[in-house]
Image (cartoon, rainbow, N blue to C red; front, side, top):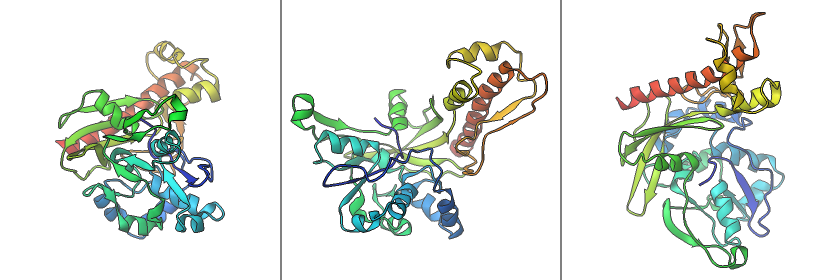
Length: 320
């Protein structure tokens, strides 16, 4: 399993990336996303890909790399470059460049995959001006993809499948039946609900993606993505220095009965579901002379909870 959406483009001949990876939280393509919305593509993108137009997804990151790395577009047009999310990058390196592949769960987070067909969508590639030759093969989540280079691990090891981290967590939490859901807390918070074998378009600003794919069927999910969860605790530790380690925050927050009117919106990377505001930024309000470290710690944890509650409410409305 792997971090989703993070985008790498590399040289097929040398295996060397042409630029740093662009991580999923990166917002450099926010203006491009606004131009896509202004051009009237919002409904088309949601219908085809199940996603909302946002710099979170890989498609606009690929476009940025092709436009901003000298010579990248010309080399891509000649078939010299390869794109991948981190699963594809690992497959390429594990197999010595023999395997350029991704699985359907990761592919469904690029804004380039047609949910109905499970294949790359020509209209989305055209809108974002991305050559098809750049893209990996889309394979089932569970399949024998190939084998590792024998020289790497002391023998050829079969590569038996892949899944984006949140889809893997959905499976790991045993949400294998329609209507079962999980919420995972890490850097961000990700709530996913298994919605079965028919994709359902959200009416409440959630995402539809592939939950898993097998050779004979695909299952789908609804997802609400909160960009900053545990990262807010890291920020209190690393940037403000009000705690020395993450586990201290619980006792500190519990040392006061409430946040004393302090609210923290941890929109350090914009706001995800259900707001999708790339330009939102972190905000702390309600500060007084009596505000303490403990009140900030409590407001940070409550800020995570409030974001998750927003997503849960949206999911309730979508799923009845």
